[in-house]
Length: 370
Image 1 (tube, rainbow, N blue to C red):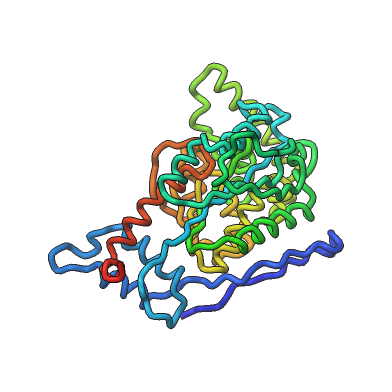
Image 2 (spheres, rainbow, N blue to C red):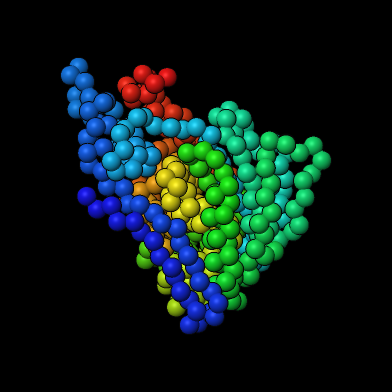
């Protein structure tokens, strides 16, 4: 059994003096004996083999995450679940790549703080603790009157939105590293065994498409949704304009091919923080419940920095973004749900949460404990 811990210190000091990224240690999850034990607990002579289908593989993954090699299997713990929502703005919105104005990011954040956003309903329903992180909104963020005190607000602003990546890098490399480290630090201070991760930010799907294209070799028109461009009308013209602007950005940053360089050139502060949060959560053996396309792009970056992180990721759903389907294929991941969501904020991750609870409850050893 290979139990080698993956860790790295990415030294960029030759081109960026004083800039270095220390990654946490992440244990690859290969435990065939544990997989067999979990499958045996679910087996019954009255049903065919693997009768519970993907529920069995989900339980095996959660068991591997929470039980280090040599530990006796004592069930799955889903206590104190946390939702982190990272919010930031993107300079490329100036190029008209989104149907929404940049200020919409702040408005969506304020809805979450007031407790009236879709994600707030699901947080209350499922008993999650919600932390909203200002990773880099363009405007100053203050709590509005009548705010929901159950929503924690963390100011971790790296910058007032990224730069316009059509004209230059979205952020300096030092800011990308600072955002990754900030995401790690946020997770270190949270309790619980499960971390759901979502995001808010107008223009973020443009970054996700660019990162998917660059890190996975997906043609940019496919990452943006080539199959939707035949609908005609204003939507078709807007999509074509968006693609042209993203092609300009991709061409300008054609030399940014490593995960860290691509993140700095074409990413966002919230994407970097999500990637850092995933890495830290994996190092602490937490189940990481990933939301939609943008969070998936952060997972691509995290996997590029430390491949073992993939073992800890549970993808909550497949969104309507065509690029999200391709991203999941490249991550070799099967999402738990496909509800045609486009809302972000972690809604898709929390919609999938009852499946984790149901899987946990189906373990005979879990029923004995409770």
